[in-house]
Amino acid sequence: MTKDLLGRHRAVMPDWLALYYEEPLEITHGEGRYVWDSEGNRYLDFFGGILTTMTAHALPEVTKAVSEQAGRIIHSSTLYLNRPMVELAERIAHLSGIPDARVFFTTSGTEANDTALLLATTYQQSNTILAMRNSYHGRSFSAVGITGNRGWSPTSLSPLQTLYVHGGVRTRGPYAALSDDDFIAACVDDLVDILGHTRPPAALIAEPIQGVGGFTSGPDGLYAAFREVLAERGILWIADEVQTGWGRTGDHFWGWQAHAQSGPPDILTFAKGIGNGMSIGGVVARAEIMNCLDANSISTFGGTQITMAAGLANLNYLLEHDLQGNARRVGGLLVERLRGVAAQVPHVREVRGRGLMLGIEITKPGTDEADPNAASAVLEAARAGGLLIGKGGGHNTTSLRVAPPLSLTVAEAEEGAAILESALRSI
Image: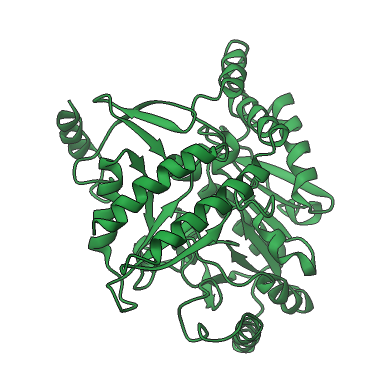
């Protein structure tokens, strides 16, 4: 059955649409932190549909909210008042930390970042954007144009002029040997130098922890130091929270809060986990920025009633059950367990991340050279053992990505770590 579906997939889907595993699997249903494939195999899910199933599979509170809303009305567009959309926007505006915030809903993180770029460039009257090396911001034409990761950038054509800044990867590159303070100072010097060679950019867009890049990040406080430089020059800061938002990092509700000394970002983008599988993305910005567009706009599917109902139920569950705190506690146990394993596996260069957003960098033993074949072997071995994880990486790097639902229990963390240990030792 799976082979038949794979053949049909290849006959109608584009060649560049990636599939995991030598023998791809069809996931048919899930419950809690587990999913099942079409052949009846059960897996512990440590990737959550690319960090999207944030709370749990088939969470009763979300399922009920979606079902009840579907029985009333599924969709009407933004041309009409929409109570669930307003209610979720009120909650997110308050949680964002951005003063006088306005919220616009989209259907994905790509669209959210695309909207943020439209707002920033229009508000600033500049099409120059600062972005981070090793970054990923989506697959639209404008988002690809600012993505600093060659593996996810299929064209150099872009409506934007993009300049790439150091700092997204702490343990590689020309500043890796520096202390955290010196690393930040060097990155700030690099930023100042870039700004001396160009017309004023509209904004810097940055993921507090780079997702597709392999869960890499700069030291805490890096973007606060950047913001001081940007603010002096009237340049906006866009925090891409598509993967880091909603408490996944454990220590903070938003990734930008690890860099909060200079205040909140001007624009914040979100998506993925808030819908728990439903298609929700969005942008939060100060009113003067959000309202800068001088032409009409709508969203056909952004903010539709059924996705907003899911988002409200999911957010309520997240807050009421302190899943941010759970991510901090269980993630802390998981990362220490994995670091203990990594110390005994020569292929593991580093275990990094925070909360339930962990990366395991795989290299050829005794070197800093990426080993994609070894990473693929671990991915396959983990699946054979009943565990689903992800992959990532950027320039000359290969990483495994571990990002379970935030309701992960200690017992499940230990179960997943044991499978992953066996997979790593099998390289």
